[in-house]
Image (cartoon, one colour):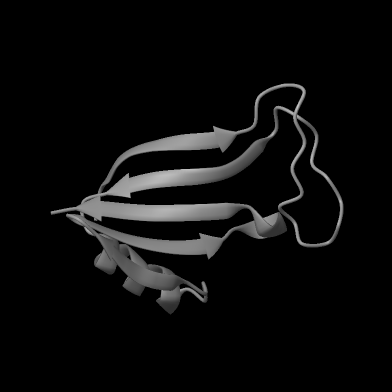
Length: 83
C-alpha cells in the first residue's frame, strides 16, 4: 500500500465548529480532519483493523472507495482510493 497524497482539512479564521460531540469548540483555523489518498483503501483498512483501529466503510462513490476512522483526540480521518 502506498500513500499517494494527503490534505488537512481546516476551518478558516474567524469560524468555530463543534465537531467533538462534547460541546467544546476547537479554535478557528485549527486542523479539523485529515484526508489521505492511497493506492488501495481496502488494503489500508485491513492493516489498520489488524492494528486495532475502528473503521467505518467502505463507502463507494463513483470510482472511489472510502473508509473513515478517528485518530487520537477524535480527529476524523478519511482514507480514499480511486479505481
